[in-house]
Image (cartoon, rainbow, N blue to C red; front, side):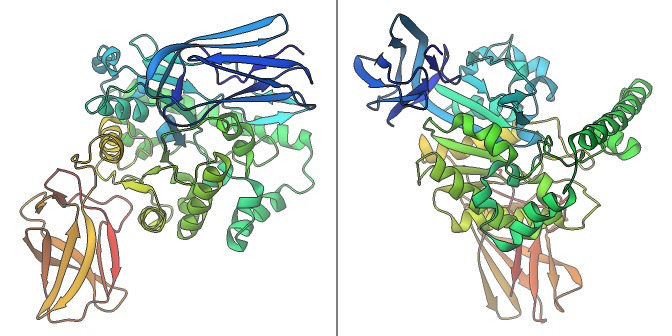
Length: 499
């Protein structure tokens, strides 16, 4: 076995600035490895298991540099390496959603050369058998975003990077580590998933109980049957689009139905507990990052009430593995969507996301109300979601005068003849989207809700009522309308306040 660099090291890559730089790979045990980068020289010996690792001192933003690795007669050169800020775009299908499928992609495509960032997509390996990865996906490496290749980049990540360009000229690298249809439970270690008894039962024990004794032949047969069902559905979609080309994806989903989901459980199922933690997350472990951009939760709405535990444990697990206890997480709150399978499940999960951020250091939440579509779980317009993610990162890292936070409830006071609600991050005032919609949902018995009109004053709302409220809520439904915004234009964060 000749010396090799890990696959994440390729021409055009970006390495995180101002953090220790680690370069690693494989080779023949006991052989010497020499490395040079940005004027620094290092050497080491390959370990008995065939692994090697070399560390360089942190660097400020800049480049391009050449990374050289030499062992024996073998010389490896990685060219056009930049030092900048590297973000991981992680999660499920709405993070994965390709730029080429976004709304107005053709009109936007010519502007991509101005965005100037670099991208690396982690191969979507679903399972490993006999030491081989399946499906076998060729490594593509890092590349510079331009009109020719932008189509295969995450749409949210593209618009995120585009927004950042308004605030910094630091080289930007984005690593796409995402897979559609995945629960957060797919992205954590076995130890992490089994640490909490309720999570262990729901996500680990129940899954493996269902496939106990399943043979590979039985799993392959189930996969074949599912693929047939999926193909039949896709034919119906194609026929519908030909017949009604003017209709939206939301209308299509409403008329034809949703994509058959989930697929069959098994050892080859990419949705199995801890599966992608081993096949995808492990591929990004050795590097350092500016922040994690986390857009996921749709697959966990069926267990929405425990998502806080799941996401909190994932953040802790990733920070430990990435050796950075202060690594920021920017959490995309689920947008509006009319999921009629479990009433209020999306509202509950949004609140769970908010609680994680409230209780976890170096985390922020991005309100995405208004970025969804009623009957389409994959909204085609990613520009606003990406922009909101970008302004949050801009405020955190580049310009603290940016108004990146959405307004959110901070205090409820009982006053004479009613209640006074105070909000933070309004940047001066809170206003109604439409004059006739000054109301909140209030329960006086803990069950039935009434729409009660409110008066707006600066960063406050006043509720006039002689009754004693039990619950005051806003946006507490799967597909809520935007009724209020702050002065920055960002929508009010949903809330569910027990008096």
